[in-house]
Image (cartoon, rainbow, N blue to C red):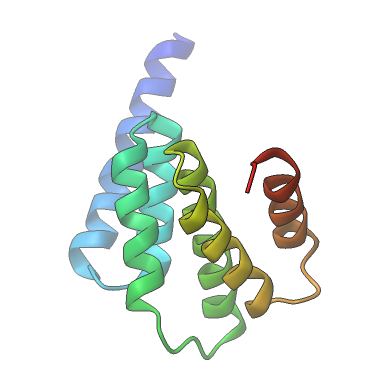
Length: 120
């Protein structure tokens, strides 16, 4: 019974995300959410595309919410770049995330862990 419910929930979630992306394909907020869904499903190539789209389409982030999604998208771009062993690219994304929100504990922690663990 629980597996059936979980399958229906996942299908409903995917359908809901699809509707959002189809209605607003350039909305970086939706691209970020779509990328997160791909990460959960283990499709890291598609997740990377969505996070990159979210960063590239949101050049002028004006509201606090838009800044938050830009910041999260940059961090996730960095995480995915590390997964693909693209370390220079990862460092660039993580440094950009710290510049958007300088007091951010998350971005500085990710960047610090990256610098400790990845040889330069």
